[in-house]
Length: 273
Image (cartoon, rainbow, N blue to C red):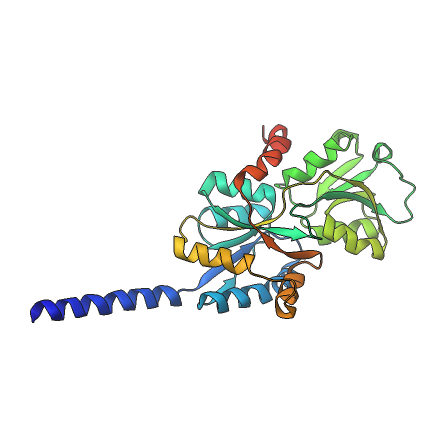
C-alpha cells in the first residue's frame, strides 16, 4: 500500500515537472538589423507562432547591437536567436549554440551583401569609391568588411569609414548623402532600390542568416522548434504572413549545418587578428 502511494506521488511529481517545463517562458533574441521598434514588429508574428506550436510563451528580448546579441546567445540569456553568419560563428565558439534552421531568400538558401550608392551618384565602379566615405553597420559584423575588401578596395582607400549600427541607419545615411556608399544585406538593398539607392556591387552567395538555440535548451524543445520553423509553409496564407513579416524577401526556412559556414570562417579570418 505504501509502495503504491509512493509511486502515485512520484507520478504526480513527474507530471507536474513536465507541465511546469511547458509553462516556462522562452526568450527570443536577435541581432539589431533595424531600430528596435521595427525589429519588434518584424519578429512578433513569429514569436506568437512559436508559442502556439510549443504551447508555451515565447517573448522577445531584442539586443541593441551584435556584441550583445552574441553574448546573450552564447550565455543562454536567450533561448532562441536570429543571427547573422558571423554572429552565429562567434556564439558557437563561445557558447556552443546549435543551428536549427537557415533562412531561404527568393528560393535560395543563401544571401548576398551589397555595396550601394545614391541613385544619382557619379560612382559607377568599386574602384571609384577611393577617396569617398563609407558606412558599415555593427563593428562586430566582420563579414561586411571582408566583402568590401574582397570587392577590390582596401579600407584605407576610403576618405573615412564609420560603423553606424544597422542596415536601416546605413540606408538612410547613404540616401541623404551623409556617406557616399555603404553595405547592405540583399533584401534591404532591393527594398531601397526603389527609394533612391543603387546597387554597385554584389558579393558571391553566402550562407544565410539563421536560427539557433542555446546549449541549455533540451533536445525535445530543440526538435519541436526545428520542426516549427521547417513546417512554415509559404503556400499557407497565415504562414507566409509570418515569414514576410520577418523579411519580405524570405520564402521560409530550411535545414542547415555548421559546415555551410566554413566559407565565412575563411573570409573573416584576416579580420580577427
